[in-house]
Length: 608
Image 1 (cartoon, rainbow, N blue to C red):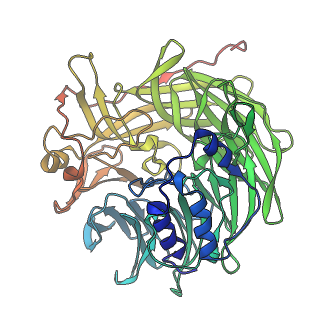
Image 2: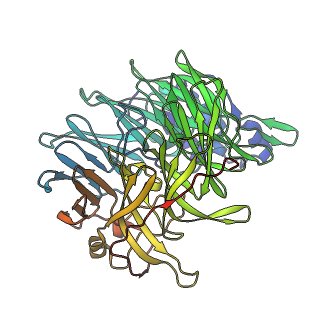
Image 3: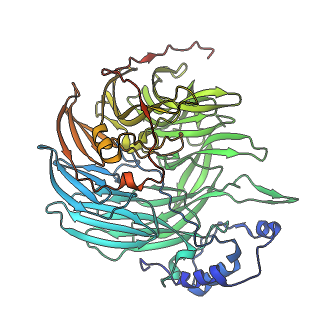
């Protein structure tokens, strides 16, 4: 299939914009025309695509509706699947750091902390980089086009410069293959392409979108192979031989209108890609919806999903669903009992044959589910604690860390407040407990690490955790927020206790380029706030490195005293690109030695 994808869609665009003036169909007509079909079918021609779109044209979105939404990003401490490499704004190898900012990729030599190269790239907000053994890869989003560039590491000579159709959702690298997932509104297509590589939607909900999977050979630089799948993709999971695209349906538990009922299930589509052209090999349904791609895990040949469901009466519940591999697809195999009734999932992590799941409404129940027998998934333990975690990390077999938000109960729900970091002790599964907790700030405080897991750094020995943070105080509703701190926190772990031992900041650069009162707008827990201070923090032996869009600083890992710095030029457009005007904050005194001792928890009684 040609990488520019589309006569499907020259016709498509014309039909969407002006084929009929018959007006909007009635709600009953829309309800009756929504459909589900589990069969795998390709369009045989562009004429067939045109006919399909024309039949559904009044439901399709207009040309101004956009799909520019990046899927949740990847882990820093590890990739979701071993050997599948993921991208971020920061990459490193033995000799260099590579940091992507608007307008350039900065190449910094580790040993001397010197800037050896500044590679020009477009001035875009949404962009990431990824390393192979010999290449530095760059992917960015420029309107409805995906930009792919590659540079040789030996001399930084550009070897690849490609443009793909669609909005960039996610990408992975395995060996010399780059897999890119894009999505495009049908109304934006304009050029012809091979329509026989486009698959019918299984859930015909008239979303008007096309999911695009591209496979690029980085070594031989052959033309990209690609397929199109009509319909939305909400989550992307990849293993060494297959790509799985998940589509959550709001009507997975059934949709009723009058005496009629319609079943429109959530489902995932399995794509085989290792042997020849990519091929859709299976469509499998599941119940409910997923929080993000971390809700997906694999163990002992089975696929597991942590899902949230709403029944016809609006009651919310959660479970783990198991699927076994069958030829080139999967079949439903077993599921756990329901847990977290009335709550929804906030974090999921898989470790070995166990799943760790956080749900929340007023408190933070953390569940441990045994996956060893996919026929009989069993809940092993439950911990209840204030607030909720959005990122979970194992520190050892018995101790897990959670980064998330404080919460204040208010009637039937709770208000998210400042940030918190917790340690959970599972040594005795009959009586697990929250062993320690640290808290910072009030509602409006934010950390990119609560949503972007690459922003959370854990040392190899699992004895130190570091992450960027913006701490705000809200003394009362009349005075507004007060700025306490922005930068990064350094926490030391000893057994099941945690202590804040240091803080580092790029505040002087933020004030120099963004103004003294400038901070990223405050964010509630569901938003991903881009910090105007430190974005990534990294430790190598006795040295800590901090990265922002303005430069790099090097600190001693014990005293946290600055050792060296590199300040970039001021061409980054972040400050000017913000839609909102700078927010005014009053500074309040900050302890120069802000180490906070851990709040030690005690094991609850067996009755709890």
